[in-house]
Length: 330
Image (cartoon, rainbow, N blue to C red):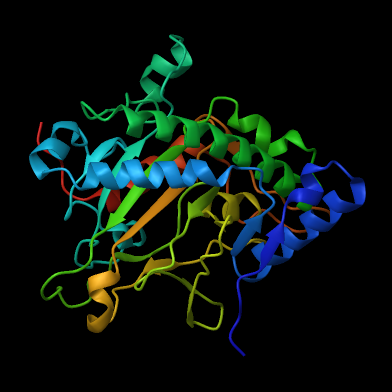
């Protein structure tokens, strides 16, 4: 029997009802222990925010390459600006060598940060590198910042659910998002033209690095696929007014491997479906404060920590750069 990704309604947790909060936390814990992916409804984010952002994002990606390159990512250790085709190979984060991902990206992080040492000091880079905005596309900036704020709120809600699921104080993870460096990435997968390289995917198999990821999915050929514990690849559903949520490697380590960070990929559509396979995914990658200490939550009993403590910064930075590809031109 093929495993399915569960759909979980977050409304009972948002209501503050004790029984509802306990039920949602239990459902989420089960999903993290068995598959590492789930779908959330009842999240409280207005559908129009995703629709508006999708439209303005496609307007940007339809621009000539010269225009997009005016906001090219300055360095490969930054998740900022435009990342053209051929510069990302996410499978390399896990030591695999594959052809580049068949996609292009536009990414931002926190947009307006205080002029304080935490955000400007030497440890703040690259988490608080400045955003780059294309000229003449004010709608894109407005829609991205609105969506970013809503995703930050949803990330805090999920962080509280995770704490409940692990029998921790509600603020255990959420408090670490006060000075977060979450990333919003617009992932454009054009309809493939011509022959692809052997082994090339729209996005190579990988697991995410951070706390958790929130994805606005699209129902088009050649979509997101998730690897099950039985080593099968299953398609992630694209249910209206929901988000795909998956656990990141950081959270897997934090849970002492009790929860799963699962490999996933974006497949290449069959040749007869490619003409209608253009895809725009909107991914929000939840990253706690860079100096937050990740210490394994072992729970009660005699369970030993599998990993030594490590800061968020030390865990993430080098691994992201490995998948980012070649150094962009200065």
